[in-house]
Image (cartoon, rainbow, N blue to C red; front, side, top):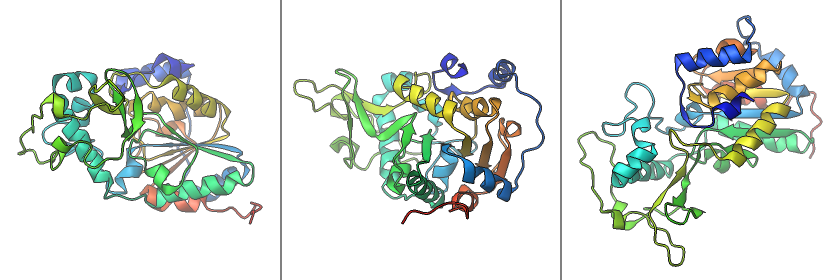
Length: 307
């Protein structure tokens, strides 16, 4: 499978996308449809639905995406900080960045798109139908909205991993360590805190005290093999796929929906703009996901509601 050829997180390039298209043997397709009734009919008949979500969903909750023009924390873009090399060079700066992101999430809530997905999953599960969320987001907003069947392919802001013993654990402390309190301001005029490494988040396992890092998949790192395998299984078996708020420029996630489309399964894209993959999909619904998604996923007239 093509997913197994690209298991490291990275930004997709035009050359790589051309290679993917050649390997997938994509057929030329007509312009994607925006016919909601046609989508709803397919939706009403689907038994296994995969929903792939990206930063655009979180952006509608006011979560910074660190993408595009103005997408900086201080003077760095995310791909300059979210790497093993950046953490090795300056763990204090990287922890300031993630501390800022963790604290921001305490002020944000799931939006109508998150809630529509969660309600759809709950409703369809009572009918013996499955909805699986495959998300690139690390903010846990899908969890907070009430979704259960979630594959977080890039990890979570609220998980840590020890650099010494490898122990992973949920961590919702605010601040995550005393030295980071009041740190992490995104203003480009803010100086680095330069926190000594011994005062950064440390492992609490008996006898360890190793340096903690965010348990997220950084650029250049390999995705968790178990999660990737489960995602492949979902994508191989789904009979409808939704792509919600993703730019389709970070792989391997950028190849998930095109892989599904290549085997003839309807794919519907919900996004503010066209993406490199838009022409490969059956449907494209333009606009904010919080506006376009709820009517697409609401109860269909043909559904037998379980009370």
